[in-house]
Length: 503
Image (cartoon, rainbow, N blue to C red; front, side):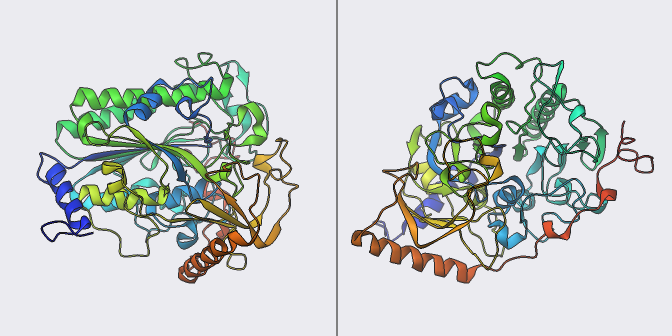
């Protein structure tokens, strides 16, 4: 499209961004909120009847709510790798499955994160919460090695430690269910040093809130643009909540954990307002993968979507998402296709940063966010938890149609009455693929058939072939295995391990 003065839409958009930001007092700030195992149907603003999330509801009411937003993997580590790099996990090698406390590999240092994109522009960068992209020898994969000035958090999933060291709601009841044994207690790290081991979960969210509000206030006082990344432990099982949230929701332990996350978000909003930078800050919220349905009422809810965590059905990878920026993003709802992959190129455009010189899978969402125009994303690819070149894509969404080339259940999605979700729903190849119209049938109940669907199938096969032809699988970081000596221990010379790792 060419404007009246010979400028195409891309140039007009760049001029608009310049007028908004480059020519203003300071570049925009960014806060990226990433929930853990939160399902499409878990938030009140996405239809849950008993979730208590007043701050997220405020962001949804005053911002842009996405109905068709996707992560790239139905489990934690690969999803996080894609979010921070704008690249499918198959390119970076963060597959199959997830990283563990003693994992030898991690997010490769030659990958470029959002923080590393922003650092050359003078941004202050901080991360807090669940990293889960590796620790490695001498902490070589920690956030401070990946573009973040500061980090406070647990470097992997909070259930990756002995169960008796994790106290949940109510405060005097120990967790139930399966936890990792024979590994060190869960550490709280500040930058590259262990601050507390085992971490005090009941005070953890306050520590995060204090860290984040201090970072916002200090950055604003220096008039320095900032990027805050908060990958929360909530609402991953086993849930926990401190005194400000325990017993205060209508949803039991899951609801209390969600409320505690919401409380922290409220504190961040207050810090932005008190620092006078609320109107110059983009807040983006989404989740890493679908709910862990095997935990029943403690596992989350995928709403009308099929299955959950561990699967390539919609419930495993379609996520709630909200973009909030008062005065810049108009309130509304978008049904356009978008993904965590798109966040890096969008932030780069808004900040005026250079993109990494690698194959990116993300698309700039600036026009979608600022003008609620059509998304540049036309397709979404679905890899299983254990992607391989032999099988390739398990599913592909093109426009409103989704094709399943393979289907498989997962232990994470057990206990549901749907026989396609649990682990005993073994791998099935579909030739021709199962095709669903996700606008008419988001629950993936009724596969389409007949001659009318043939043109759609042909176009999907063409897109699949083009994408897979461009995919170069990186060396698997997770297949490098684990070494108990790499597990974070505040007293590394002590014996006997792991029980002596206590401080």
